[in-house]
Image 1 (cartoon, rainbow, N blue to C red):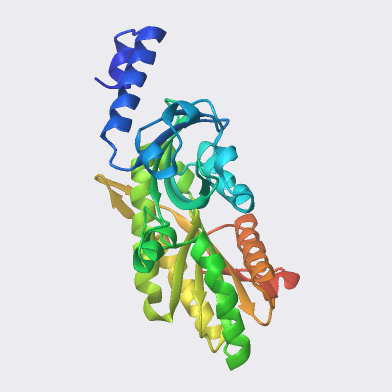
Image 2: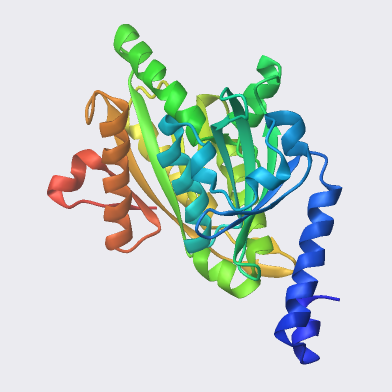
Amino acid sequence: MDIEQLLQEGADEVTLQRFFYYERYAWLSLSHDMAAVISLDGQIMDVNNHWELTTGHPVEDMLGSYLLEYIHFEDREQALAEIQRLATSDIGSASVTFRFLCKDQSYRRTLWNVIFSPDHSAYFCMVRDASEESREQLEHYAYRDTLTGLLNRLSLSDSLPGILEKSREEDIPVVLFFIDLDGFKAVNDTFGHKAGDTLLVRASQRMRKLIENQGDVYRICGDEFVIILKNCPSRALAEALAGDLVRRLSAPYLIEGERVHTGASVGIAQHPLDASNMEILMECADQAMYHVKRTGKNGFAFHNDLSCGEKTTA
């Protein structure tokens, strides 16, 4: 029996609460990993017994406490921002990695796959202990986006400084594309999160196929992506790739028998022309992407052109 059926049959609040409770209990009990249900304000509402085996915290100690209490201070801002974004965006899931405080006051690196349920007004979390994984497994789980298989924000933060340093040493230009899918919210609103997730996977496949060995594709959050071209000898090449990227991401998708459309706004920043470090390079590409958003969407712009107000459409 699903929620819609219960509502159509006029179920009262007590019946719905009982339904949600048993649904949550079954999900926690059947999980082979650590699992938790967390409220919108970060309070731990329920956990399974795997937590005590891995972290030493008994279930009764965790219930009613707040996730913030367990996150390493240096990881808090980014981890909480990634989780909270799910409640206000149109994205169904996210992967978050941070150090978790154990009962013995040591920290374990954990990988969280989080889904926000509007019906429950809560986050459903599946958690793996990444501290004892092999190097290959750790790279896969911690540096890969669970939904799309692309490299994630953590991977970008760790790898980009080294890429830029190599660029300076070898005098090889690096180009960064910042991509936002136009019209993604409409797809989610019309067809639901499952269709939205399918679209993200398909868009990721298109980007990866286009770039191939010329660089790396990252999903940094929601429907935002970054592409790093590690050796782009000319603006003309970057411009040609950006045009192809917009055209491919604008082609229709067939999802669950429906043709859906999105576009792509792409901001382009060049190293060392626009910036000498990671933070400024990302900011430049982000500014160029929003310039495209403001001036018609579904196109691309180079940050170096913004003073002239130029935008190139594909």
